[in-house]
Length: 206
Image (cartoon, rainbow, N blue to C red; front, top):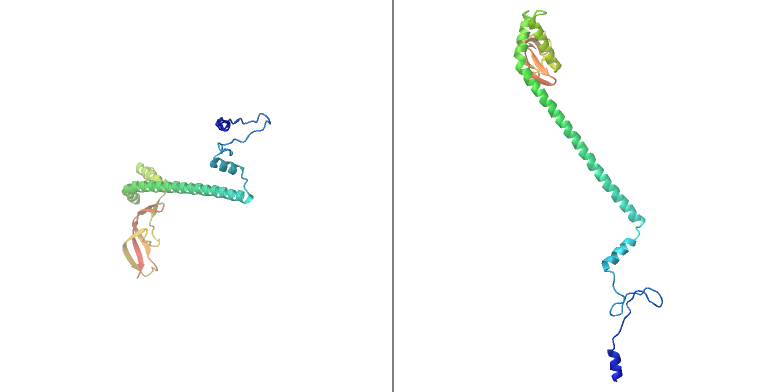
């Protein structure tokens, strides 16, 4: 009985070497209870399984379609941004041109009395050819014409309230419509912008 107790109290030794010295095989790690050790966590196993998974043709097709949709979306965004930038540049250029025309029109408007005086002098024969005043008038008119300044209101033209201001109406038996009978003050336009309407006398049917 004593021998049995002494035998049970003897320490037990486990060979924890990975390689069996007798067979040369790699041993499976053992836990304390004798079962294989859980050397890999569940997450590691899942990652290992995911790494070994082969995608099917349907999955590959879905991935390719998703990539195409993403590329198409970015291309659409880029095209939309480019169109917005182009519209912005066009809008800025249009506003710049409108501001330029407004400044030119204001400058010309302030000089219209000078042009009127030159027209009156020319009508009275004061602008003789070769005279200094005639040269000044020619240069001034030529400079305004380069900016697109045009005269508005000519005798015999149909009356247009958009460009003409009727100061006098002259009933006439020969008139079939409202027609400019005389120009009292010439009007001017800069392109599509009316700077000053022409003051006219209008011939109207009786």
